[in-house]
Length: 110
Image (tube, helix red, strand yellow):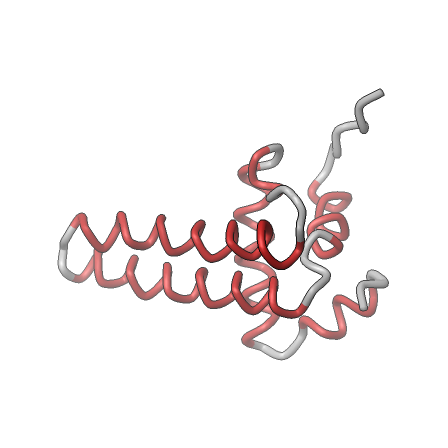
């Protein structure tokens, strides 16, 4: 029997954190998301479509490498693409504002 589908973002967020339990996974996500932001800014300021492509590639590449080689699970983006994108930005923001560790502890992710 297949696992039931998550119905709300409030349910999805703790699931997302558990899927990123290892620190290296989170660091690779943050690096890729931050790099994607830099490329996206360059695409807007340029404007150059190659930077937009680089933003998408860097955003996903580091995340998928992390899930494949570090976490050993399947990226949630395949089942929940929009929530995964939102959660990735949320995790990245919490990392850069030093709030991520407290959030991980709050949801029981060590």
